[in-house]
Amino acid sequence: MKSARTPLVVANWKMNKTPSEAAAFCDDFLSRLPGLPEGVDLAIAPAFPALERVGRHLAPTRVKLAAQDVHVEPKGAFTGEVSVAMLTDLGVAMALVGHSERRRDRKETEADFSRKMKRLADAGLAPVYCVGETLEERDGGRTEAVLAAQMAALDLFGDALPPGFVLAYEPVWAIGTGRAATPEMAVDAHAFLRARLADRFGSQSAGGVRILYGGSVTPANAKDLFSRDEIDGGLVGGASLVPADFAALAVAAGG
Ligand code: PGA
Figure 1 (cartoon, helix red, strand yellow):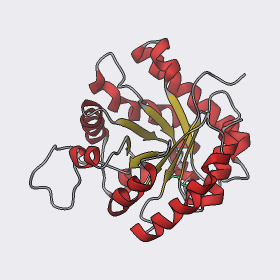
Figure 2 (cartoon, rainbow, N blue to C red; figure 1 turned 45 degrees about the horizontal axis):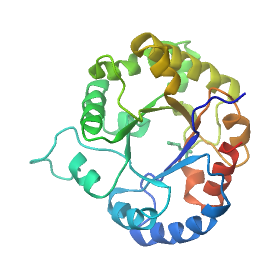
Figure 3 (spheres, protein in one colour; figure 1 turned 30 degrees about the vertical axis):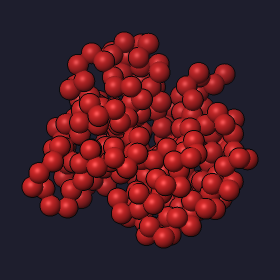
Figure 4 (cartoon, rainbow, N blue to C red; figure 1 turned 180 degrees about the horizontal axis):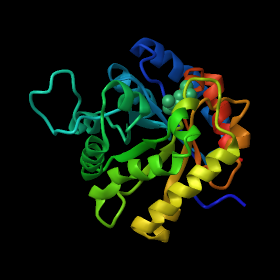
C-alpha cells in the first residue's frame, strides 16, 4: 500500500530554456494539466532568468514555482547571487539545495547547505535537500556513510524539520547518464535516509517527509520507481524538459 504522503515530481531544468522557451513549455504543459492526476504535487525549477515568466504561467495553477539555488546571505555585495527575498517576491515556494552539480562545480559543503536551508525555512520556503553518493563511493561500500555525512546539514534545524522539507536521493552516477538506480537500490537508500530522519527528528516527523528519487528518471522507468512505498516521487532533469514527458511522469506518480 502506498504511504499517505502526497507524491511530488519536481522539474529541475538546470541551465536549460530561455524565458521564451520556458513560456512555450508552460503553454504546452499547462494545457495537459487538467488530464493529470490531482493527487500529485508538481513543481518546476527554471533557471533564475525564467523564474518570473514561468511564475506568471504557474500562478493560477496548482503547479509550484521552485528555484535551483539560493545564496546563504540575505543581501549585499555578492555579485551574481540571488537572495531568498528575491525568490519570495517572485512567488517561489521551494528551492533545491545541495545538488551534486553544485557540490562538484562550486565546491559547496554541508555547512553552506545548512545555512541555505535555514535561510529558506525562516522565509517559509521549503528546502529540497539533495544527497547522493558517487560511483566510487558506492563501489567502495561507503554509500550509507556518505549519506549520513550529508545529512549533517540538517543539524541547524534543532529538533524540528521545517514545514514542507523534502529530501531528494540522487546518486551522482545516475544523474544524466541514462543509468537510473534500480528501484531496490533507491528503496534501500530511502529507507536508510528515513531512519536517519527518525533518529534525529522522531518517527512522526520523519514519516511525513517526502523522499524523492532523482537520476535518469524517464517515462519508461518512472512507474517502477514511483510505485514503491518508500519513493515519494522524483526530482527530474532531462525528462522534465519535454512537456509530454513531464506530464507522463506526473501520471506515473499518480498511481
Ligand atoms: P536527470 O537529472 O534526470 O537528467 O538525470 C536529475 C537531477 O540532476 O536532478
